[in-house]
Length: 218
Image (cartoon, rainbow, N blue to C red; front, side, top):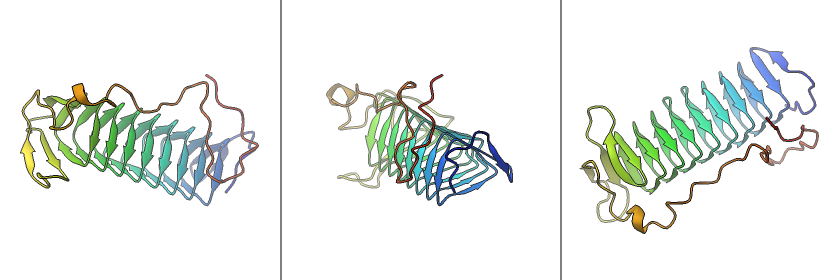
């Protein structure tokens, strides 16, 4: 379905599709604006705008904007802002802002300026961290350091590789995961790529979108 040149929204079955380029997509009861989607399913999404997505599914998501989404699922009132998501599952009212998430499941958590690879994150708040191959639960993490806990549970981490593979460990407040001391972590000071308001474009998903409007400027 293409809607490259629509001067006004297309309304039908609860949909609003404006200035978007869609290829082999299913849209149901959702609002899609200024986006490029290929091989995607969008169902009951409150606001999906200015994103590029391929082979992804969005089910009852809250807001997904200014992001690149590839082979991922976003659902259950979760929100994505200015992030890159690949081969990941974002669910249960999770919020991801200015982060890069690859091969990771994020559930009921908040991420900001984080880089996560092959992780499972449950009920955590993570800011400016770079984690790989970890299962994290019930912790508040900042710059790779545990600074608090969520609820009454003790924070837990499980390393999925190395000598402690699969071992669940309670983490005391103020501790740093071994091998990830931010003082020695060269990448820690650099936030993941973000999208500038004045330079954001929809990207290229293999669909001819030459007639799309110029980049949005607030």
